[in-house]
Image (cartoon, rainbow, N blue to C red; front, side, top):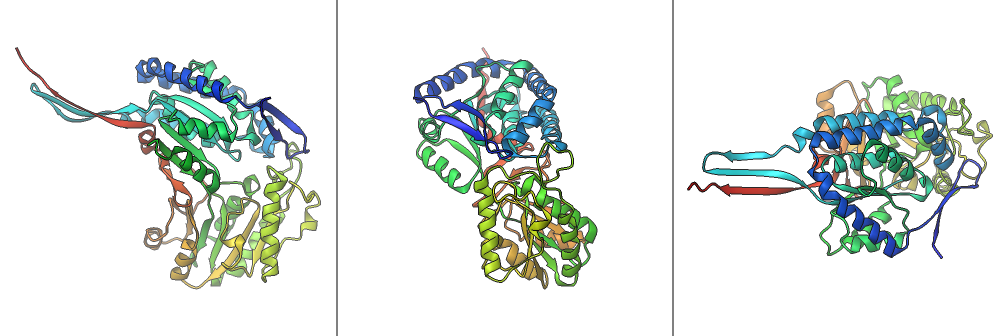
Length: 462
C-alpha cells in the first residue's frame, strides 16, 4: 500500500489534502520521461522558452484566489497578504530579462583560423525540493532559471504545502511548458534519497532544515551531483546610535513577526546601541501589541497560526528556557486570547537575554525575538558572528562608510543597510556556515543550473 502524504491544516487541525507517494519504480520512470523531454526543450530558441515560462507565471496569477485560499489552509498565512505573487512576478520578470546576457557565450576568439568560446549548457534534469514557509517564492528561484536555461524540472513540495506543486504544474502546462518536462512528484524521504543516489539529476536544490541538507548531501555522496542548499538561519539586526528609530522598529519587527516569524531571512535577534535600547524596546512592544492573532481568513488578522503545533512548541520551549535563565517577556499572552497552546501562538519580545539562551543562538522560526543592548561595533560584530548560521544581517545607520566597514566583517550571505527580510532578484541569494551553500537569483543563479562547455575549433581551409 502506498504511503499517504498528508497536509494537516493549522487552521483547524483537519486533513486538508492527502496524496499517495509515488512508488520508487514509478518515480524513476517519471524522471526518465523528464530526461527524454529535455533535449527538445533545450533546442527551442531562448525567446520561445522565456515566453512559455512567463505564460506559465501569468496562468499562475490567474489562479490567485485559489492559491491564496490554499496557502491559508495549508500553512496559516493570512489571506489579507495576497499570497506570494509580488515576489514571484518580480523574480520572473527579472530572471527572464537577464537570461540572454547571463547565458551568452564568452568569446575568446572568432577569426578566420579559430573559434574559441565558452557556452552555458543545461545540466539536464533539475530537482527542486521546496519548503512550506514560502513554497512559491523559494521554488521559482530555481524553477525559472532552470527552465529558461533549457533544463527539465522535477518539483517536490513539502507535505505541509502539498497542493503548491499541483498548482505550479497546472500553470506551466497552461503556458506551454510540456507536461513531461515540468513535473510535480509526491515523494517520501526514502524515494527522494534513492533518486539522488542514483544520479537521476544534474542539480538538486533543497531549501529546508540543516538536518535535511545533511541527508541530501549523504544521498548525493559519490555521485558528483551539484547541490544548492539553503538551510537554517538566525538573522541579526544591529541598530546604531544614528539610526532612524521609527523606521528601524517598523522594518525589524515586521521582519521578526511576518508570516508568524516563519521566514528563512526573518529577524530573530536584535542588537541595539545602548543609548537607543530603551526607546527601541518601548516602540517594539507597542508595534507587536498592535498585531491581531487569529483565523487567517479574517481580514483583520495580521498574525495567523504557525504551520504546525510542533513548530509552535519549539518556540514555546525556547522562550520558557530563556525565562528560566533570567530573560523577561514583555508581551502578555493574555492580550492575544486566540493563543490556544497549539498552532496559534502570541508574539513575544524578550529582553535581558544573552547567548547562553537557545532563543538567541538556535533557529526559532516563530514570532519571538530577543533584543540586547550593545556597547560599540566590536561587540555587535562579535555577537552577530556568534552563530552557526549565516544568511542575512541587517545594519541600521545613516553612515554608509561605517556600514561598509562592519558589513565586510560579518559572516553572512547578504548584508542589508536600513532594510531587512527582502530578496532582490538582481542580488545573489546565498549563505554560509550551516545556512548551506550555492546561490540563487541574479546572473549567478543561471550558473547553478548550467555547466560551462568549451569549444576550440581550428578551421582548416582546403
